Image (cartoon, rainbow, N blue to C red; front, side, top):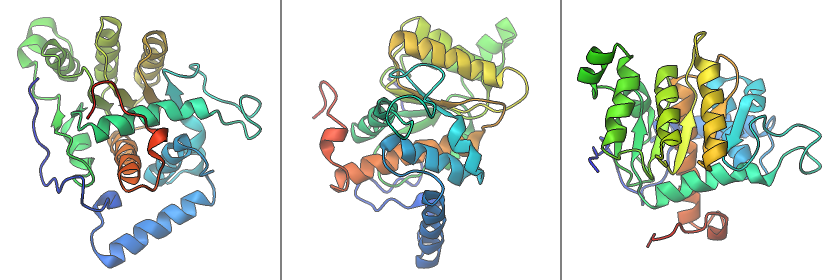
Length: 263
């Protein structure tokens, strides 16, 4: 497997700094922002942390209701009348656990485009981070498919997505290509997909959820037209934050059990 190290990575022992905050003032702003998010989003489960991060990344309190977790739950996600008394199912935690475990195991993080890669924090992990775009140009030229779809297929041919954290923040065609790869046998550790737009964005995420549920691939997506690179990076960074909390003993390691073969 070919990987590309992320720039400015400080390693897993460095304190996780949300949104790259490093100064005392910046950290205070980040902490105050998340405190306000926790006033409007439950903070009881690992899935709640992803919902909260979606609100933090979009500035929209309603976005928490658009997040979907698949691979362990049905495609429609929980409702107020399902699961536990508060309407949330702990099964929704499973993709978060899978993502955190992949971070702890230093699995590659593979984004669709440069903007998403740039948004992935360099702190709190040793995961190599690379982008798909820039690969598959010959395939795109030969077939007429989009560059992002071709780049996903090209990397998949090299086995890059197996056991990786696959992140799609911009291109619906990349999400559709990734769904085809999963259907053909590729098994990412977890998929974070929030492609944005009016054409095929919602459909591409629905397709990913369907394929993920069928093949047991943990997936974090959203419904509707909205999404984007910042959201995808933010959700991925929250998986890194969960992993950091496990490493520091703030989350019971039993919540994120070791994967087979991990040291």
